[in-house]
Picture 1: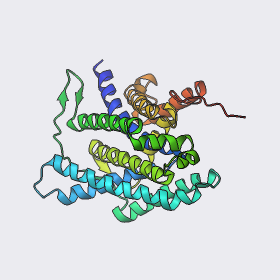
Picture 2 (picture 1 turned 180 degrees about the vertical axis):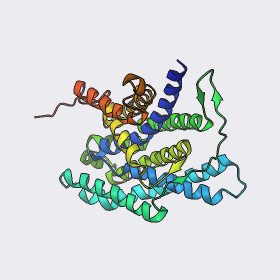
Picture 3 (picture 1 turned 60 degrees about the vertical axis):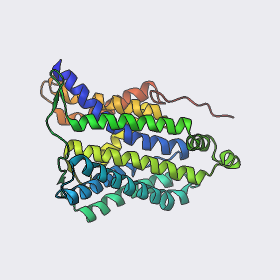
Picture 4 (picture 1 turned 180 degrees about the horizontal axis):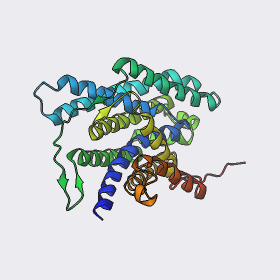
Length: 307
């Protein structure tokens, strides 16, 4: 049972980071029906930006939590600017093009960002400095670190703030109106281009936070680190119902739990044939099962096309 509860904690932490990135996917898709496959690389840029700031301030004498906060703010600014630029230069001109064109552009942008990051930060993995206390907190068997507590707390606050923004604010109403019908929303005074740019900026900020949390939790950064979390987060968004904010959160947490429990028990279940490094298969097996039984995702809605 101790192993079970430990894996539950690990799964919630992992799922919280997936949920932050999945929200960026689902927000963009919900408004302009675009899968931004460069979103994982935005996470990577946020993590590497944070590493640069942390390394620069390591000998400044500032407390670790303050250095992390400064690096987080810098990462959010850089990622928001990057995603705003990507949307304006790469996606906006293709908004009326066939759907395959923006999809290919997104894949190309992903490779471009990886290459630029490799040139700027070099390809070798870099250790992320320890900024918070490393002594684990004993929960009566299972343990949790201060960094993991921070991840869960920050994720909960950000998810609540995003739900409030979308459901209770003027910008949120504009986002929902643009998602419903951009042309009608424009006639009612909404500026779709501004709303779409704001959506990309918000998604980038969430990805930047996830990138910093990922680096702090796993202790290493490199130019290719965004690919797998981005793919898993996209899987989580589809699992919960692409375009549904609550679905992205549920999908991210569920995916994290499935992956953590799979890593903890995979060796025992297969008699030692498969080890914990094969745990990634559980995420995609879960996706296949859910989409086979419910193609719209766990919280997705079946929408009928009008004749």
